[in-house]
Length: 236
Image (tube, rainbow, N blue to C red; front, side, top):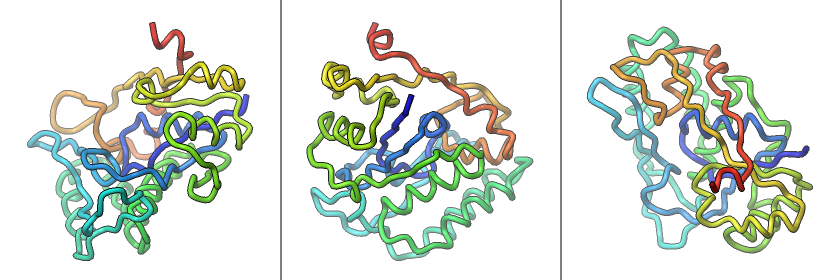
């Protein structure tokens, strides 16, 4: 069953995003989606001794209606500061150097947009954990029109999808009946939130997967294991 996953590029996202990619035959970066404040396009939480602060990529002036592949990062040296923050936060983690090397591999490239940067951060994580999808596409290169649920379905149809796997947020806008009529089975992630050794107190799953890389190294692959649930069962 050919499985497609579509997501806006997220900056070094949490493990749940990697679990979607693990299940994908084809993964699509929705890089021409509109930027909105408060999302995870340019920020993610870390687990520190002081709580879960945000690691945020500063942006150049962003105009209303800009897409992610039109949004630019600030020109000042935020990369060096973020590396210093990560090194300080995870200095006691057993695989801190591996994690920092992963981040440096993303930072050493001059990405042309926020979409490119965030997509590169996701791809670096799935390569690190050896869960790379067989095929990766970019929505901006697919020439598929529409918005919202209709466009997601059109992308799935263009790729010959038999199954579409998505996160819980899609429940609010997906037209499940349209997917059924098109012969595309919709399934939602059934997040396990599997625990692994963390620094700084009680476990939390909702932080960057860099936390998993620093604490477990490549063996963290075993944590990226959630399955899916059919949309009708999920809706109940």
